[in-house]
Image (cartoon, rainbow, N blue to C red; front, side, top):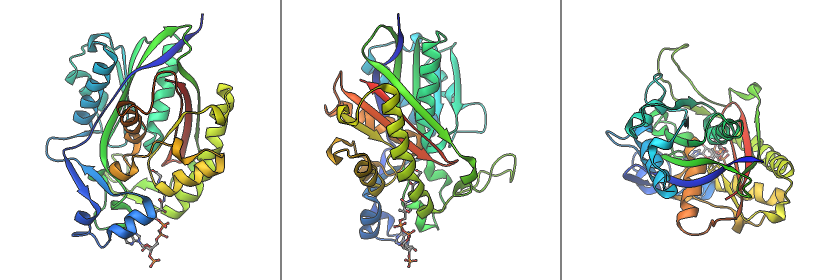
Length: 320
Ligand code: UT7
């Protein structure tokens, strides 16, 4: 018997406030034309008072459980991927756990920045396959607006806030589920995309800093390679893929990666125009959008990919 982790449901949540490029250009030295042309971003959601990583994550998780038809009491594992926790500790995963009314399960945060959801999915999948969990919430939730330097036009226009979640459930001998994953990190590049503060260095939260062009260059190479690796591990061909659900950093990165792999751009789920880069939330957010609008259907072969600070990067293949 083969035990697999199937995706039983998806959910997402966005802050109420939607901010367009034009609105941003009223306070930042930028323009809708520059942002759209260089990134494909048209708008992003920005968290307001009372909206935090944990509240957004809990809303996304609730919707994923509803979609799966599973009661919160069945959850025995919560992995929250985030680089913007509510506090340094306790883990925001425990705040989500409490908000869902769960009083006993494994709950922890995982930090791999934009690749966080891929890392979290792989950890939860491994725990389920090893018999250590049966029903897992895998959540990516972020409030990057709170670590942006709003004076730095090269970064502040690129990011947004939001959350996405999936319910993974153990199933025996299923054709569905997570088929493979591939994860990487190379810390030699950790000064190309980072936050310039933290509890053990400055004692402050710090702001996001990025050398955008260098990140861009690595992104296309790493993403194409790790996608090919995950497909090979799953024993499937690029031609078998129904949908790629990529990390939403920049439309140009998505187009270049698709070209490099020989994938039709029409098979990429693109939400960067509406969500901007929501770091660990971007893959599960895009997945939920495409599931709810009917593009992704049961039985489809889907591929996830992401790359971010560290550098970290990864991909996973799943039969939905
Ligand atoms: O999620 C983690 C992964 N992150 C990424 O994948 C991000 C990867 N990097 C990128 O997406 C792109 O490098 C950016 C979108 C960040 C930048 O695009 P670019 O085409 O590499 O632009 P650039 O940095 O070379 O800047 C070109 C020009 C500069 O002006 P000069 O020096 O040519 O006069 C910038 O000062 O654009 C200027 N610029 C802006 N202008 C208007 C930079 N930001 C802005 C802005 N509005 N917001």
